[in-house]
Length: 211
Image 1 (cartoon, rainbow, N blue to C red):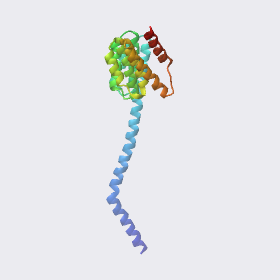
Image 2 (cartoon, rainbow, N blue to C red; image 1 turned 180 degrees about the vertical axis):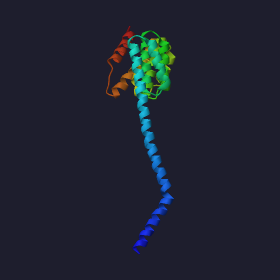
Image 3 (tube, rainbow, N blue to C red; image 1 turned 180 degrees about the horizontal axis):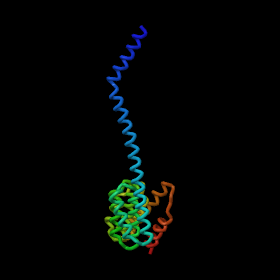
């Protein structure tokens, strides 16, 4: 009786394995493949990040030695191979700042626009939008500068309002300039911050109006 029971158990196990063994093996292989695939993906991401970092370093070194053309070449490689990397936005920021120093405002604007339109990092896009507005202000394109500032996210509203004040002041509209500066002051105050430079701008507007 005991032998029959054992035989029945073995037969039941054999039958169960015949029905389910292939599925178990397939599941194990899929799981193992997933682990290996994830590890390979992680390794690829690390290589991509390291490659983007190295190119960014080459961009900054080229700028430091005054070779903007070389820096642009490395930036082009970043754009081609690492468009989604934060290092690409940082490289374009560095090159755009150099462009502004050299009076190449159109080139600077193009670099900032790329970051606004393509950056995978929202904070980089907002910073680029603010800097683009400054470039447009410097070019005298006041309507485009204001349009760029209207699109700035709420987290950067104080900076946007201050820049709006600068645009209105450049247009000679002291009333709107004052309102924009005051809005910036109020936003900063709500966050527990302040900006003495903003206060000076407001005082300057008041002094001009009193003359």
